[in-house]
Length: 486
Image (tube, rainbow, N blue to C red; front, side):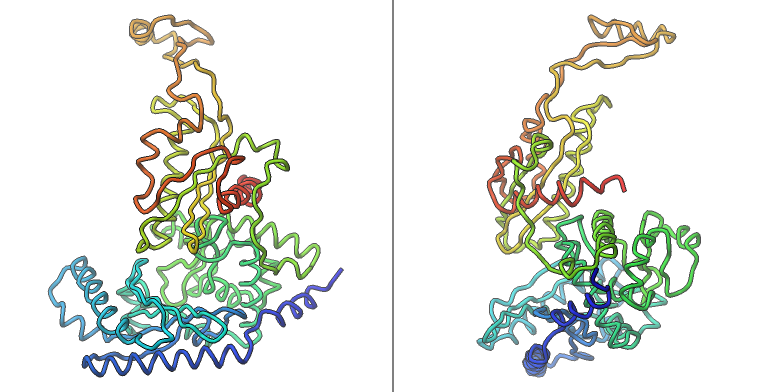
């Protein structure tokens, strides 16, 4: 059996960024800064700093061929506070967003006038920012340029951030100052492993969201090296990783932590759980793969492979229980996370109304779903498992117990052909829905499809129309269903 350390060393050689990549990224950053500074001078705009953040920025924890650059522009909050003095918190937030959008158009986008910058656009998640592609000689680099309030660490710890991204520069500094070069390489190994498990980031095929770079970095900060992270991984839900050294019982008394199953507290903001968005499904699948790796160390566990497509001939035992809803994105300006979240809401609705009717009578049994999407091809999918997809035309609905005579009389008066059994009165009732596919086609389901999507297909998994649809079914069958009870 190959030694774990040998595997780590061999994998690291293939995932560390090359010196050529580092030099090229720095040259792009300097070119961007120069363009932004020039435009700011023309507009007489003040700012505190322009600096690359994230893994390719001052953290330096990126993987090879990671060409995403995050450039942050700091704004002085005190001057903004005076500008919007007297506004309520909500109106201040809306006014700030509006002003940030204006700056994105007038300053940032109009700075990107060199031929290397392709298709700059204003995007939204929680916060408006500009995304642009830098076209190099051999690669395309994705650049996000983000405005934020340059707040002191003391201010954030006392008051919290003003915008969703104000903590980010402090995150970068914390990692830069607290992780050694070896630990940063261990971060690379951990990120590569999560990516190989398809459980990384907000595009994670397994679960709504997987692990992120900052969560991997904090795991290294707490455990020291990647081997100890993997050894302790299975116990993470039972432990609390808190920079401020509070007991789990104390954290559980804080309302916004009460429902969190995994606690990894942000060293920058004691009121933020970095792990709050990490899906339990992503954790369960990673935990399974980690156990496999520790029992049989092999480089293959770090290889990022394409998700296979569902093959009905191999999955005969379950194929009749698997279904697919396939969609195409038709509104280009809607962020993929917005569509993702709406599909999860649709999935929740299908579960709640498909498992149980309004009168609490059972319907199609256990329903489990997963969302899978490929933003580049504008394809979005909802794969579903249904325990009982075909039902009898009638079902027996239980009424009141026989000892409640008045209620029994009312029940029998309202319904014909009642009968008694096991101390209750019963009625045979015709089902509203007998076929799961027909249920998925009902108006109350279809009208909840996000407006940004066009429905292409609802069918059994065996009739999936697209490659991404078949991949969605594979993820559900092999990466979600086997681990749902863990």
